[in-house]
Every structure is written in C-alpha cells, then in structure tokens.
Length: 163
Image (cartoon, rainbow, N blue to C red; front, side, top):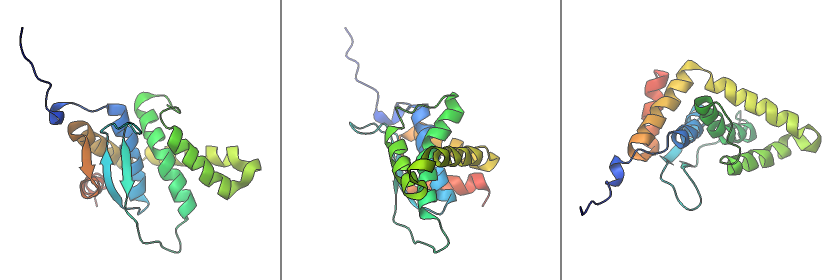
C-alpha cells in the first residue's frame, strides 16, 4: 500500500466555468472603472468563486445602478458564452442583486423588459473581441492559481485591451 498525499493546492486546476464567471465580473467592472480588489475561484461554503471590489471614486456622469447591474450579470454572461447555457442556479445571488437594482430603476411593470435589455447589453460587451480576450486572460490565470489580486486583474485587462 502506497502512502500518497494529496497534490499541493497550487497544482489543482480550478473550475473553468467558475473562472470565466468571475473573470466576467472583473472585466466588466474594470471596463466601467470599478476597481477590483481580488478575484478568486477558491470555493467556500457560500461561494464557488468571488470577485471583490474596492471602493472607487464616483464620477457624476456614471450611471451607478446600470454599472452595478451589468457587473452582476457579466459573470453569468461570460460563463454562458463559454458553456453555451445560462446557469441561473449558480448565478442566483448575482441575479437577485441585479433584479433588486433593476427594480429601483425600472419599477415592477417594466422590470422584465429592463432586465432583458441589461442582459443583452452585457452579452454585447462580451461579444467585443478585446473584452473577451481580457475575460479569457483573467480566467486562465484563475484556473492556474485559484486567486489573483486586483492589480494582476488590471494588468491582464490592460494587456488584453492593448492599453
């Protein structure tokens, strides 16, 4: 009988769909000037992954509610672009947050229509070649290491965007 120990955490490849999901949040946040603190696909009891944000400087011309809705929907949109299907169950918290914000903006009568418009908008953003390259780059880093800093996410974003 051999005594094999588990591989070190650094050598375990992390879930690809979750990496794309979290990378989607990070890229759309960065594209809308929302600073990212850290992105992780290290599972916890509450999350399969997490994109944490820094407090940013608010500009008067920024539609904060729309920006936050787009960021919330971006994870599911990026994951769906990779897998071909929406995993609404896995994106439950994101969808609930987006719906709460959308209700503030659109009201009960227009809620479904507004949500569809925001999802179409984020899907359009994911269709942009440079945005998608940034998602792929950040997702690859997450699959390799499980977690990246906001600084690394910004660096990968800028490289992909050719900034």
